[in-house]
Amino acid sequence: MRRPRIAALLALLTFVPAGPARAAVTLYEKEQTRLEMEFRLMAWAVDAGPDLVPTGAGAPPAQDGDIYDFLVRRARILVRARLSSSLEIFIQAGQDNIGSKILRDDTGFRFKDAFLNFRHTEGLQLAVGQFKVPFLRQNLESGFNQLLVDRSIATAVRPAIEGLRDQGGMIWGNHAGMQYRVAVFDGSDQEDTNTSSSLRGSARLSYNWFTREPGFGFTGTTFGKQKILQIGGQGDFQNGRTDPRDAAGFETERRDYRAWAFDYFYEQPYQSGWSLVTEGAWIQRRDDYLTDGLETLSTQAGYVQAGVLFPWEAGIGHVQLSGRYEVIDTDRGPTSNEVRGRTFGLTWFVKGHDRKIQFDHVTLHEHPVELDNNAYRLSFAATF
Image (tube, rainbow, N blue to C red; front, side, top):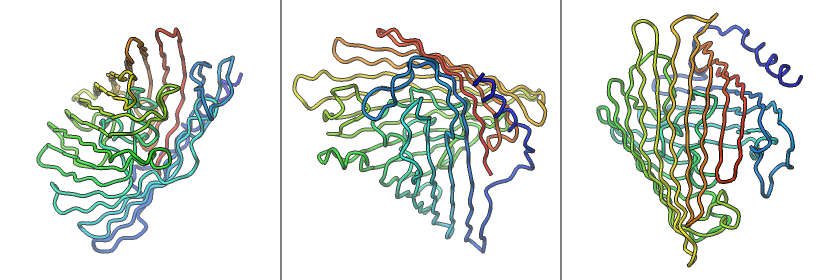
């Protein structure tokens, strides 16, 4: 009975009036100075198998039956301040949580982003502070702007807890359809456990046809409002680092880490009202351990996903059908492991990404350890 109750609770939220489309709330504006604030909330209802629960230090107790969880997945407060034509401040605070039964709870309310952006010209800008590492378009898309309920598991082929965000500086800019990002970070999670790691470097180069995307972040779909084709290449590296997300017994082993990837994004609207969007990436990672005798860890991962937006109105919004295939292969000497995943989803855009209901079914198959994992996720997201 718990599953229908959770679904009914979230379904009731769909009948909250959407209201007119609007941007963030403007708190102050005078000449070139502008201060804006925005609130974001995402709630999930999850039905998942026990094999999705992690093991190790800090993990929840073992589960022997299906898991039902209702949780606040993301809660954010965003503040944007434009102090002049060349200086902006961006702060994002809140929490990420996938529920104590599905994954370890996050550390609670904390700063996600906090950085200054100096704009000399459109083609030459400098960001300093804490922000997203420029590696993979899907990581640069907000969690509230995803095509499906959440990102592909392939995007997690990155080191440690600071893989999505880190502290440092980045030179970036746009010229015609090209965007470049070159960043240096300190590898923020290394300081307490590994004082001998080097700085972390990351870079991304992309080119857009049809419609430019010159901003700091991207979107998973424009619901057929723009025709976009972006091709990107990126790399990420750090010497002498450790990785607490490595397999048991290897978490504290120092290694030279390298990762590189290619990705694409394509969205095609049609005059009939239909719209097609597809996105994919191929990632390779290499960990060369500094301890003699340890085999190199080699990881290959990728995903491809697509969505079709129907032209007919469904109540006060539109419906999009989507799917994803993803794979992660790891090799450590003679030992190998592979994970294959399929996801099918349905989204009701009540007011674009600002108000939407998403449902998906995730199936993961792992080999040679024969595990079949299933999860049903219902998500409600609101931005105001």
